[in-house]
Amino acid sequence: METTQITSAPTPAGNEAEQTRLSQASLERLFLQARSHAAWQDKPVTEDQLHALYNLAKWGPTSMNCLPMRLVFLRSAAAKARLQPMLAEGNIDKVLTAPITVIVAHDTQFYEHLPRLFPYFETARDMYANNAPLSKQTALRNSSLQGGYLILAARSLGLDIGPMSGFDNAEVDREFFPDGRYASNFLLNLGYGDPQALPPRGPRFEFEDVCAIL
Amino acid sequence: METTQITSAPTPAGNEAEQTRLSQASLERLFLQARSHAAWQDKPVTEDQLHALYNLAKWGPTSMNCLPMRLVFLRSAAAKARLQPMLAEGNIDKVLTAPITVIVAHDTQFYEHLPRLFPYFETARDMYANNAPLSKQTALRNSSLQGGYLILAARSLGLDIGPMSGFDNAEVDREFFPDGRYASNFLLNLGYGDPQALPPRGPRFEFEDVCAIL
Image 1 (cartoon, rainbow over the protein chains, first blue to last red):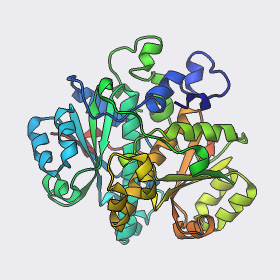
Image 2: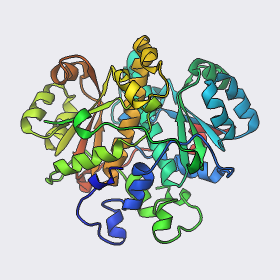
Image 3: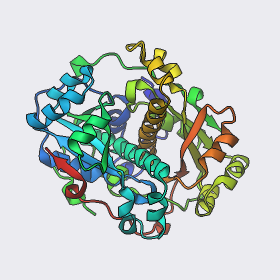
């Protein structure tokens, strides 16, 4: 653990502190001690929790407030069964035992909402509608940013997460988004992880390996 | 504000609470009251803060621990001047007045590190090296996820942020990554925002508009 690097002036007490810097315990929950889980406790995630989760994550910033992320929460056995054939073998048990599996997707025509979401730039809709590579890249970048907010919003609410890319995106899209407008990005299991089942943590790069200050 | 939707059982007091759910003040700092800033107070961001920021954000999950994000922190006037010609006009003042502008980039050959970062899957390196569309999509998805962690890590440390996509990626890459291996994703201003300069907040979709539970 490199928590020793997360130091600064002592945190002042009370509400004022939270307005400037999160407590060490919160930093541990969000980042320093947080892990991706693959084994789940038999403890449900409620519909109220899913609403609370979205209603935190939605506030994260996106380019021109384009908000391309769309979410399908798979909770029922029937919904999980529809996803199962599209999963890499190593991800099947994770999905079947997780209380919720989220399909994190995006609206490939997100730009149709820009006149309402970002009225300040009148030509924004056409800029994307007329440039497929730009709109594709923008949808993937911003739905992934929103996926990052979703992951940390889940941890903020005391939930554990397990993201997965091992699945057939095209098949998931055909099954869950048959009109072709939404496209899957990645999958995310939600629930309460079993800490006893965690493997050792993977390494991370040091600051000097991947950062420069100019 | 829709903070009323973020409710659950009363938060227990003390350290135990932080291990399960962040305080309301922390949720406000990260999500509910957080804004993207374009005007900056004249208050520096230190090198220690940049290290602390990276050393939080690096713990966020990526696919096969591939960790593609690379960061260039532009602090000096000389470094900002190199970026200036590549910016959309509306972003020039934001960059020149921000204490730090970060080039959030990714390593297009991130897969060369997989044998060390994710030794459990021996063919992972070749799977990406031999599939340019897959590696490109994986780099963009995961460096954007990491960008989301970076944004919320900055807020966790009491910093404000302002992300920007309005710039010429190819020109930035030629100027800052001349060997062609790294590619810019988006820009992020860091500092202490001026709350007086904030415009009204943009709208967000309701849960029912963009989410489904199956």
